[in-house]
Image (spheres, rainbow, N blue to C red):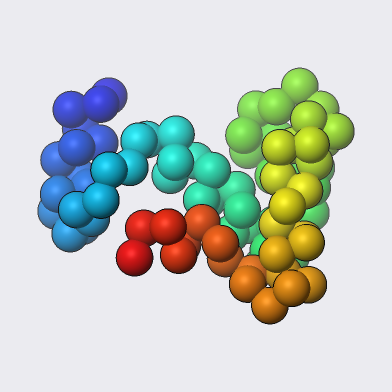
Amino acid sequence: MTKSWMTVKTKAGISKPMRLYNLRYLAASEMLAAGADLKSVSEILDHASPDMTLRVYQHTSTAFRLGNPFPAVEKIK
């Protein structure tokens, strides 16, 4: 899986270090910032409960209110 991720990352032109987990984190943050409901995102991530998703990604709503709705994107630019 890691080798495939490295190939995709290279083809996408992402030169900064970025683990596959970071992509999962980015996708979840983007979904929540875009208004996806917590239960759906929790199911997509295969979390045990929406509470777990909320604990991990609750910063997304805070960042959105502070004018930086996509903080994870800034890390890979």
